[in-house]
Length: 333
Image 1 (cartoon, rainbow, N blue to C red):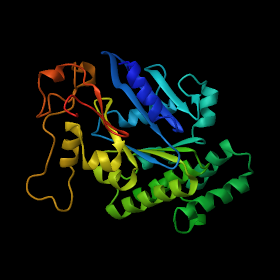
Image 2 (image 1 turned 180 degrees about the horizontal axis):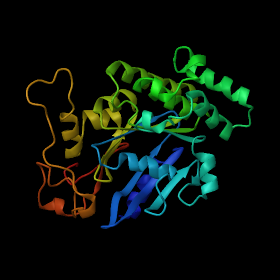
Image 3 (image 1 turned 90 degrees about the vertical axis):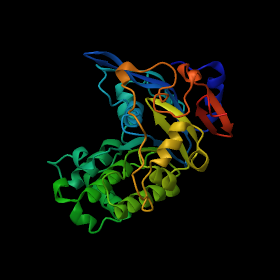
Image 4 (image 1 turned 60 degrees about the horizontal axis):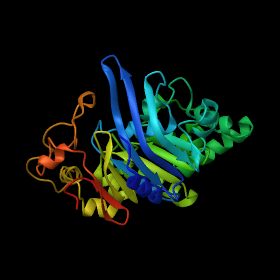
């Protein structure tokens, strides 16, 4: 899907001060059953010192968006179109050598499953120091000292002892902190966090959110956090982009989007959020997301939407609600 001239101008205004800008990002995956388009015209920007949450159900394209930014998807099956610029540099056309200087240094990522992401045969210390030495001209001893300092700053007890531990010797919450330590080791300008609080108890979740907040405050870095949890988005983010079926369907300041949602999917997502005060039957969004191999024409949410009508058979427009707040829906105005 291509953006119109008017929408291109809107994106330009929106991402003018962005350290990372994604414009009309499309992803095609080559499969045995034919091409699949899990990302369709994704556009957003994130500024220094701000947190953008990408919110949506599983399968909406959130994690694929982060992996597309860093170009870690297998090139033989993944084709990217559009634009991803980092401090004015185009990443989609950069060489692999150039991308290796970006990944883990200027843009770092916290992966969704820390236990799987950490190498089980190497100690925690060796994995952190390797990252530092790959991107910084320091000795092994200096890298070790920096790694211990990083673990201490994240509130990890006995950081010297943790350096000699293996991932299987630690809890899921501790492994997540180690992943964060690796991601922050080189003080990136942009941090991508893929479900950093999933599968963690509420106490550890609060600690992880606190760590990410402090990182933004102390470094003025930009953070993009992927989550399916409305509560995490509300607590951590300044802005939110709601994704459904590979598209951003609503975007804006977090208070505007979550307190005054204008897309039916955003409203349904908020209503389905379970809290301690939830009683009776658990809320859920009726139906299932569309199959990316057989994406419907028009609005992809129309089969699950109570407000859908004949207009929704056509591609919905992007409606400007207020400054910075917009929704891709005929019913948004």
